[in-house]
Image 1: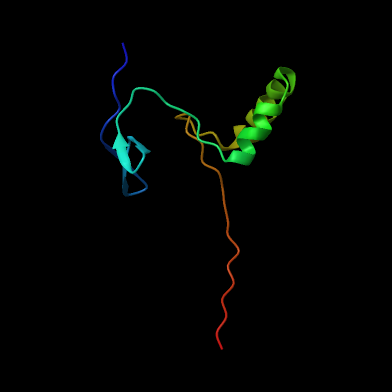
Image 2: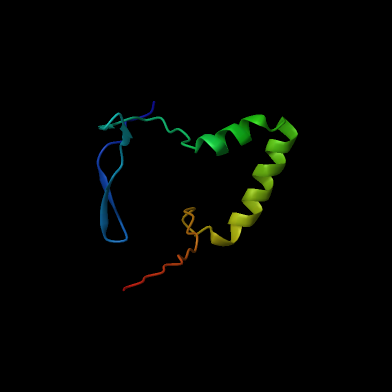
Length: 86
């Protein structure tokens, strides 16, 4: 039996809702789903089963260095920002 996920959690000091956000409303659910960009989704759907497996294996290998002991993934990031004034 699964239970519906509701509530809030704290992530890096910020309170975050745990429900899905669908149609402008928070929706509690025991299910999860993948939310991909249209381009990414179309690309993944076009892969053969063998290519999909190869993609997943490669992705798992590249993400492995960033998997924490608790199973979470923490990817490093950076941004390039430019400012100007006149």
